Length: 375
Image (tube, rainbow, N blue to C red):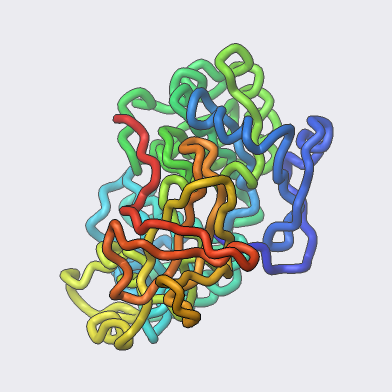
């Protein structure tokens, strides 16, 4: 969900396991995180065809709890968080007063007056500070629990059959757990929050627990899934997976200068909820005239557009857009990209050109997502 920007080096509680497994590492928001174990292409295909296990312990977890926590989050975030049922998750946005996106978050309601807000690693300080400020008029507490929570994600069509067999994992109703729902359970003597969420476009789970318990859980999942095609995967494949699924990445598709409606996320902002929320007035005004909008682009051949590449219409030398993310899709077999383009060029079927290292490559506007799993 975010870009590497920080310089301070931190390591996951699973770092020794990753090193022993031969992982290659990258700096990601100040963390040394596995970028791949073997081949990012093989890791990508494993998620689509079987299952893969990701370490996401760099993510930030912030608790908001207290009798007025629901009202506080309704004011602090763009969505209607007070309407969530206990055990429900919701994708939401932390907006600036200008209406731009400071971060995208996933919020879990784990009790009547208890919420877990999961933010991007590079935005930990920003999200914590904003929540402390915005929630201060309400009877609630904001606690940054990031250092006390590890996160691993088991993603893919075989994720459920693997997780239900992992020794020590207890989660009532796992088989019936709906999408964007979570359940409290245990892994051995440790509390475990199991959520049916993810950032790959596949069925799967995200598992939150104490850092000291994470290595044992990781190894138990790897051992259990050994005969089911499970692989361990790094952040490189996670990026191509989320791109195929049309999921935005903070720092690429999202940022303080982008309003939700430009990114196709107008539905995430609940203007029908009662009361004010930060950024509401700017959202009601809408983006400036001429603001670009996010589209999907597909092209032929093997040369993919990358972030920062210009988008053109015909032979005109004035760009009409810019690529924010792009790759040769492992699943589809051809290049895909997301780009912000001028409004007049956003309709599906519109023919455009990507400037790929000085060569204009034809591309067509297509609806997002590029890939959607079968139900």
